[in-house]
Length: 503
Image (cartoon, rainbow, N blue to C red):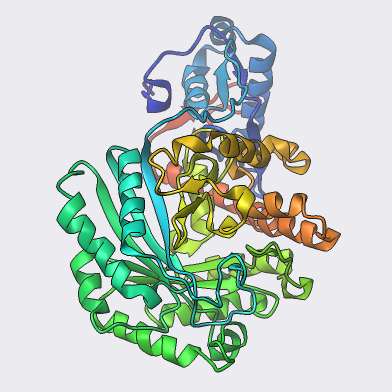
C-alpha cells in the first residue's frame, strides 16, 4: 500500500524519531478488537486483527524511537508505522505534547451567538427557572428598547472576521412578549446593516415557550428563515407539573396548538426538555413526544442547581446522574432521532471529530456568546446574567468586548480542565473539556452550597459523558473504517503472518 497523505501532517514524511502519544487511549471489546485514539488529535483507529502485534509494536517504538532503526527492524511495517502516525497514535519524538492554555489576545471572531434578552418577564412560572426573580426584575417585566438591540447587533458584527457568522438569539424571559423589537432588529439588519457588512452572515433564532403567537410570526419566520427552539418537558402529565402558567394553570395544550401552527406552515423547530427528578425516567417517552410533534431534534438539558439570583435549588429536583445517563443511551438506541439531532449526544460526537485539545468546552471567556440585558449590560453567559461580578460592561461602550480581559482571564483559569483535580486525572479530559462550567464556577465558592449540590453539579456533566463516550468512539472508528476502503496494513512475524488491520 502506498503512503497516503493526511492533512493533519500536511503530507510530511515520517519524522526522524517517533514515540507513542502521551494522550493515547486504548479501548478494548469482547471481540478482542482495539480502538487507538489520541484524545487531542482525534481520528480513532480501529484494530480488528493483529491487536497483540500492534501493541507490542507500540512498545518497541517507545523503546527504539529512531525511525530508521524501527524500519530496519521491521522493514515490512512501514505502512503500519505511517498509519499510526496519520492517526496520531505515534507522534514526533522530539515534539512537546504540552497543552498550551488558549490565548486571550484581542482578536476578531469567526462566529458569535448574541443572546438578546428582549424581554426579561415571562408567561410561565417554571419551578426550576434559572432566571432569578431579582436579577431578571421579573415583577417589572422589563423589555428592551430598539436602540439597545441595534447597538448589540452592530457591536458583534464589528467583532467578526470577514466571512464571519453571527447568530442572533432572541431570548428571555419570553422574547415574544417584545415582538416589536424582534421585528425591528431584523428590519434594521435588512435595511441598515446588510449593505455595510456585506462580508458577514447573520441568522435569526427564537428560544421561546411559544405560549404567544403573533399574527405575523409565520410570515416573518418564512421571510427571514428564523429557526425556533421550544421548551416541552414531555407529555402534558409531565410538562404541566414543571412549566405551568403564572397563576398555576396548565400550559401544554396551548403550546402544542402553536407548535402545530408552526409545523403546518413548514417552519423548522426543535424541542428541548429541562431534565429534573420528575421526568428523568421518561426520556424515551419525551423523545417520542417530540418526534410526534414534528421536531427536527430533541434536547435534554439537566436542571442547573443554582439560578441567577445565586439561590440554590432544592436537591429533590435534581435528576440522578446515572438515571440521566441511562436515559440518554436509551434515546440513542431507540433510533427516534439520528444521533446528530439529540443534545447532548451530538455535542459529544463533535468533540470526537474535532482536532485539538478541549481545555475548556465553553466560549464564555472569549465572549463568543454575549448576553445583553434590556438595559444593555453584557454578560458572558445566560446563566450568569444579572450577577454583578460576571458583568462585562455595557453595550453602549464601543470597546465593551476588548475591556473584559481581566474577567475573561479569571474565567479561563477557573474553567480550564486542568484546574479541576478530579478532571486532571481523567484520560478523556481533552475530549471532554469539562462540560458546561456553570455549575463549577457558580457552586464552588458559594457559601451555602451543600456537598450534595456540588456533587450533583459535577456528576450530571461527567457521568453521561463517560457513559456515552466509549461507545461513540467505537462507532466513530467504525465509520472511518467503512469510509476509507482499502486502508489495510499487512502484518507479518510475531505469529500474525497474513493478518490484516483494516482502518
